[in-house]
Image 1 (tube, rainbow, N blue to C red):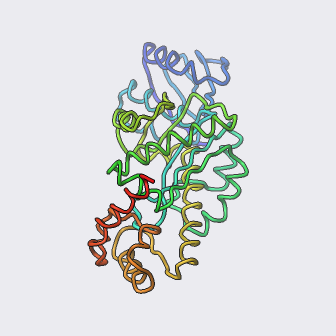
Image 2: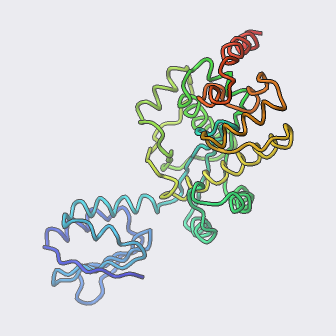
Image 3: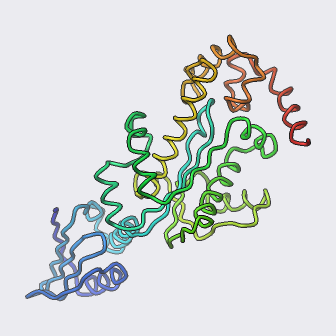
Length: 316
């Protein structure tokens, strides 16, 4: 446990005490102190009559910021929010991949005990974990946490994208629906609901309004890189990634092609290999046909024809 000491004025100590009230787990007054509190995230703050304030805890980096006490308290409040439970979080996978589905998962971490189990499993942003590790621990997370997973196949994705023309509209719909599914399954969403931010909150809700989504989950906190800060988002990221990998493996088995992830040259190579074995029309079942990769693999001429086919199928 790290320890750091600050010297504060009486006014600063009083302000610190007031600002930390909602995070207090336990309060006492040892000898020579004005007060001592233990926060819900395990930080112990001891304010001494001499003006010395001692912080003890596992994560005190916020105290190394410039000497602006209000800023530091705001940082401390943010750390408390990250460490408060229950919390729900959601993340998406597949938006940058030419091949494969879009997957969104929403998960709930009910308490600190569960969060500690996630830490022991070293659950973090799925992009920082190997595929083999993700496949190993995802079933554990699915058993441990209330969650909802939505998989939008390439065929369905291309149909919807033909109408919306915007991948972020589709992702917004999926995040919202994932939370609605949790509610439908009897899960009460906590006050803290976090989305790994992919657009501004205003834009997110506008997207949902534009496509006439009537049942909208609100009071959401949007934050970039949330999967590296909030255990619920990290867990959702891992579960979504595992489901994405499963679909990719199934596609490879079905079509006899190794589908490389991402949207770069390796994905182009997979596309070229696919066209050696299958007709261009089949790309709608495995790829996002509005990606620039279509032109790079020589299939761009088929996009217009496939779009017309989607429209015809949708009208039936």
